Length: 342
Image 1 (cartoon, rainbow, N blue to C red):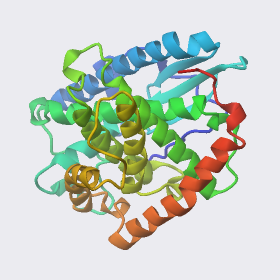
Image 2 (image 1 turned 90 degrees about the horizontal axis):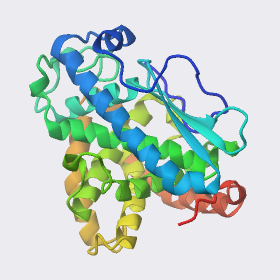
Image 3 (image 1 turned 180 degrees about the vertical axis):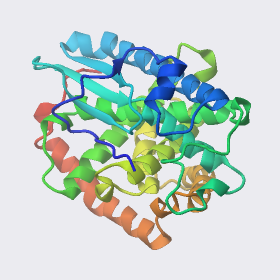
Image 4 (image 1 turned 120 degrees about the vertical axis):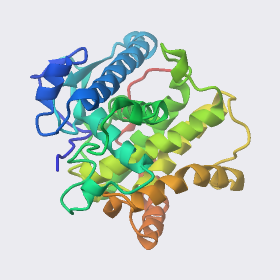
């Protein structure tokens, strides 16, 4: 299973960089280990192309309004690789210059996971224990129209959330701090998750395509819950630091809390007072419970966690990760944050 390198890198890959989506022929060669061709290849090409366009658009906005005025830069680099690779780190010798490396294997893999979770019946090809939706991309799909726009939008949202997660590793000083233990890894990941959720909550008003814009704060929060869950599943299953990560259900809370924070500040949502608000809990559960049930029936069920594990994980989140995050933000990360203003 491919591993993901995430967050605190000092060096990035400089080969296989592409600014636009590869041609279908080159994309097929890039994904040589997967059996993708015909309309299945068309589907992956469409998702990768849409993802690249969206992230360049968001990165240009971030550069124009936040980074450039502060004298900082973030270059977004797409790699023609089939692995699940995302990393933030320094870009060359410039003190304030950073880059985010992001492989095309990310949107393709997220697409495969989403298709399995959306499937109404178990995927028969995954009955063998060594096959799943990460190492064998949607073998049951034969035609592009078998996958809905709703599923594709879900994947694109998750791709954006990972991009914002890496942006937050940069602008909040994580790349300049080496975590000393797993608890600090979790605290830093939570900080990136929270702030990525906050950025996500604001970005859905800013798309070049009207069909991708959210119509309300509640739609934005719904999309954040779903995207956060999909990202949480992928990171828990793939990352080389997966044992250090919280379960998807716990990571969704971090993404959601950040998203809700930005929506409340922007006066786009008024009914929720916080994560412990009963109305919010019912709303969030109505979105996330079907996803958790689908995950537990999927080829990736191991990464869902049993109820006791999820309960213990939540207790660790609140008792250890949250206080440690605040301690790091008020301590060693305080001077490393990019002063990008409001």
